[in-house]
Length: 344
Image (tube, rainbow, N blue to C red):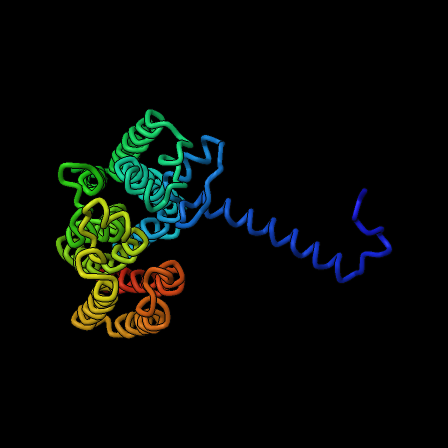
């Protein structure tokens, strides 16, 4: 016998609650699938489409800083013009830095981290068995060779006598390999690994964007390496979610080495101090307005560090990054514009 009340006995309030619940469930499911495709922490498993799984392996959410780095490099070159060819060159360099080489980096990292992920994030494509090891290896090679091919094509397009962008891409892929793979596996050392990651996310795409439209010089290289110390702090943020697995497998991330509280302070100090240092450099080259703008963009980051990250870096890492990182990346663009203005 059915216990469902007839339609006239179901109140409007009941119907509204049921509809809201169904809509919420659909929204949650849709949001979970989106997070899964973007490669975000906490995304669930269950995807069966191999192309969506391949996309998830490349973690599209991580492409954004490198794509932005190309924009900053184009700005710092002083040679970018708003014309079709320059825009197309920039978009091609973004494809190189984001989907191809960052995709390669994330895929090879997941390949060598499959034992750690089985502890920390067992829903990831490789430990969950959603994709086979041979398929992952094929993806690594396709992204690697595709990235180096596009880099060489950009050098030919620009007319470089020395293949500068190809060299930058080769350095980046080598760093990605030794960061993840034994015997070096730089990520086993919290300092070396995180700095390599920070440099890869700031220095390399910035230099590639700069080389597209200007002459890459030691000042740009040194300044972006200095800026990468702020990137080291951002890289440390990602270590807090893996403390348990890193401890079990003997990886010396900063939260494992110093404890969660001390590592959180190291993280925020690196992020803030080096940005203030860049602001000081801008003052030294008489770009005072840009220096003030950069300082104003650091202040909200300090506020969010106090509100979220320092209070509970494990629970609030994603919330902190979503709140504070936009100010950091806009500060990078401000710096790029200042350098480009000083050249002009």
